[in-house]
Image (cartoon, rainbow, N blue to C red):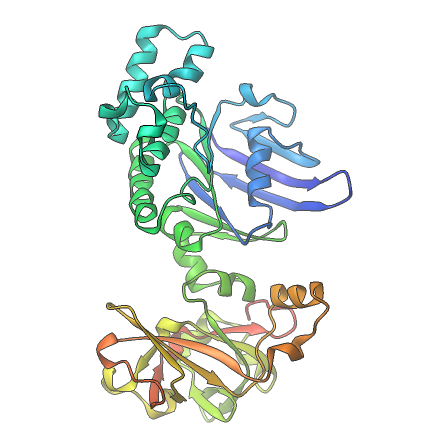
Length: 394
């Protein structure tokens, strides 16, 4: 096993398009790190540079203590698992898993031992004599994983390996990959656009936007303390609600205000945002996660100055939870990615209207009906505050 280190890595394509900007990151020996971000953000490019499938324009990449910028892919001691499995259809499962070892002239006994051990770990021993066409999608992905495992590489590189599976199988394979990593302890760099996948699998998660590394931390730290509006909106499902508002002091308390609403801010939120108190009176971005709402009747002793009265537009009943959708008559927050999307389309913020759509996750037994006016308690201890212009956390 070995660490993977990015030192000021950049990638510029011949036409001048910049895909990666000054990325520095270390994946520790035996660590599982997930690269996550929207499509086209550069995460797969980073992975392919580690594999040697993309040229490194700037900086260095190390595997262990060795700089691999000019090392051929076959000599980097890594194994890659792709989205499309890339199995040979005319070969059996055994031969697919053994193929790379045969190319390396490994003794037959050692090949057999490695393949059978990997098959046992992945629970595909009964399929070793089958061809890929006789397997389900999940079984094919296990074979692709087995082909990587038998290499016993210094590191695994995985490029959206679960994206071709249906939703139920993805959930199952997520847990199996987690168990596999716990058992093998092989350094793993994993790419996905699915933030739920990233949060449930990674020891640490690296969030990337437009080729720039935004934040690297544990899943819980990303959720609790996002460094900017982009990370806050990307991490969490449904995504965080944002609204333009102000912090106003009254006596010993600070209130978050927007559209005539005044919510007393719990001191714990201010402790987590040391720059917020000094911005009283200025317009900022206020963030509230859907799960930090609840129907007032479900919260014993809910304070009236932490309640938001809303008109229900739509309710999604999911059994274990319910999503309540409502609006606030204030212009929506234009995050950097939304601003760039509008600019690319030759439009401005006026096309988004003058209302802000919001979502609350509530107790399904107390979920209101469409058209109801309902009081929602807000856990203001978990409010988030960001600078209006830069989007940075206060």
